Image 1 (cartoon, one colour):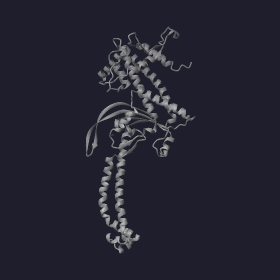
Image 2 (cartoon, rainbow, N blue to C red):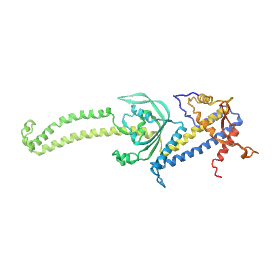
Image 3 (cartoon, one colour):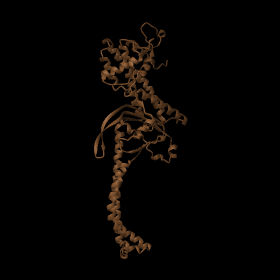
Image 4 (spheres, rainbow, N blue to C red):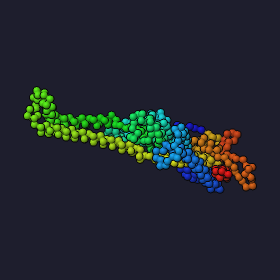
Length: 442
């Protein structure tokens, strides 16, 4: 069983496509085609029900932390209960993402990604101390070519992109932010709440923009591009306003009693006693410097708007779901992945000419996917084998009392450790039995 560092377990095709390709593969007799389709249908229904239970666990434990909730809690949980619910939610979220074939990104990996130069030229900072919990996973680590602006020309650049990023963060309570002298009403998030996001096509080195507490400022290059032109524009304005400045200084010196300074500043006593030229000088200088200040402020605001647009393009147009919407999306993704894996395992064991070990089965499925789809994957054999073993039930046939029938698993192993599955007809009856007894209330 080979392990590939540059491959993922994600199967980039729909469950319906996998089923149809199995049917068109020519390995099943024509009499079994409809049976195989029915087996896949009832199997999918079973896992849909199974993941519905996972969704309910997520919903129940997310309720006190949901920033978008439009319903009230009948009983507010205690701090200890909230802690337990947060831990249970994080655990269920981890398991769900793994079922959907996402890969965990550690906090250390995030910190290293933040240290790299971003595609968006901004200075950023994420305060990890603001969080009680962080769960970050990705799927589809690929490279894409894009054009980026560098000085006065565009250059082609290779980007490391995550096709999917799932992020769950829980902020610390309000008291923590008050102790930092942060005013809660000015925060862009609610302390003590959880925020869950699902994004697509996020460059690896732009991950910091996914965090709602990211602080953004201009780089030194952008500051210089703003300051240097301002200084250049200020020099001619200062030279032009110099006579008015000298006149105003002369007035100040006159009224403070320092008369000898008037000759050096070329301001006569008549000039300083005449108030209108002084007023005109003050007004002229105010307009000149006010115009310069307005121009530079306007340049700063335009730059700020450009930065905000870049961040908006990164987030808004790549956002797939938020909060409860993320759970629903991931439940569907996990259900698809688990069913595709089980169908592939069952099909290859059903049609194999000889017994297969776990390792042989894994390699066979990977080769089949490469041959049929031109897709190289690192198939996760352990998950579907475990799922097939856990599906246990009775095969009830006519004339045999149910009480006399022993439960059997859908998949078992022989003495040599080779995998073996039930034939199609028996497999259908077994899953039908499991489905019928999903609610054993009587």
